[in-house]
Length: 220
Image 1 (cartoon, rainbow, N blue to C red):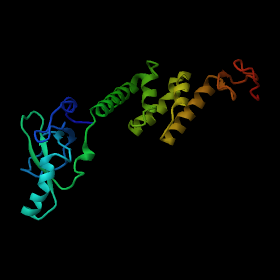
Image 2: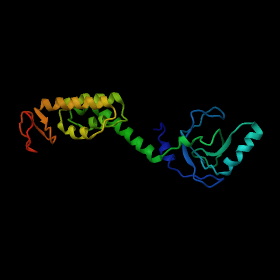
Image 3: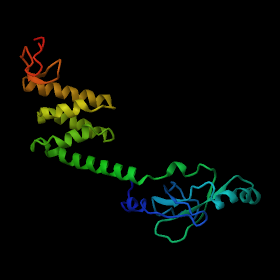
Image 4: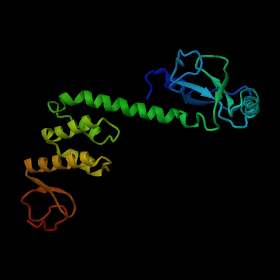
């Protein structure tokens, strides 16, 4: 997630290193700035991560000779600037773990937007008999835990067996949420005098001795 929406567009830009012509990688900026202390002014920037780039290969010896330390430089370009410059790095792996995948970021942002929209609809979902925001939150493993728990609490009030299939099909990573949803399903079935066939899982009357779907005895 970015706090600045412009970063999603910037992350898709294509730039090349003037020293090796390699495509620059869009990376998240570090939490600190080693220059004037004013900060980066952006959440993302572009870095040449080509280890064969001459500015990177040739700077190691220069840093040892001049400063007596192991370091080098990578070419860096800030958004909306035509020219970049060298940036000191302390190791070969610097910034390699901060590369931004535009598709992954866009997907994460879309998921977050769906979560926020679902949370906003919780307050009126029972009155409107709207199961969608509740299912959205319960089955979103990255959603806020309190919001997921609140959604589980609303399941029984919605009293809609349409929740059963999507919840049973979902693999819960958070066992507490899975258990809470399962308890709610049990209470909905009881309120509607229904049960699941122990053989085919078809919803049938609670007192049924034979399932109307698979014709097998329910054990009642």
